[in-house]
Image (cartoon, rainbow, N blue to C red; front, side, top):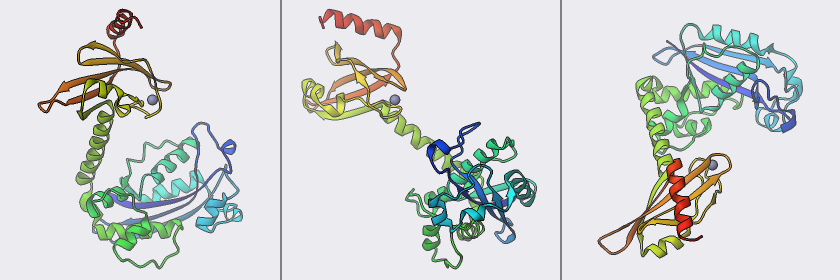
Length: 303
Ligand SMILES: [Zn+2]
């Protein structure tokens, strides 16, 4: 395995209508590639730096210019992207393990490959050092920039930042402090599983939630935080029918999101020993039978 830290600089389209959208939406066109290859015991073996001459966004976006110090004239030289990528892959050697800070660089690189019609399956999934840092070093799950992590370790800021190779070197220094290879691959897999599980729980909580300590059924039906339905998928506003009781302690309604479709909303009241109620609200995809049941109830209650 050849561990390689990669950092990219990219230019942005001047405006939305100048954005390339086929075959993919190109939000960033790569203009610099920097990389550091190191041994498994974290010694630098080689560095890589290349200027990429953009094909689509040839004028520097003011925000990119401000951060990188590059001008439009800095984009007139260098290699076309396919040749630059080829050189980068040769630099990586066999079986590269590409490490990056955050998730942006992988996304941008794959989009650039797609726009040039280059197969990206040669690249295995990248390792995000940032997420390892936030979950195993600071353990606060916050998003840290490279400079914040440099500061965390009290490392020198002696290189000009926002230069692809310098940023790759900074990232390498952080990785060395972290002894990053100890997390790869097993602990990294665990982190990704943790994140997936957290996402799943959050999603479940949106679909299925209990509101405790509600005084009465009437009070529950008047409680906006219970009855106001936001789409469990996109959190957007939904239109909802009136709630109808299908039993003494169970009310249902239909709610609809323009993007995600229709949900059956169920409020279930359960009486607690203290005389108050727990209200469980759930969003489910209604069956035809449930739809019929609801329509019948509405007809019976004369609404
Ligand atoms: Zn929705």
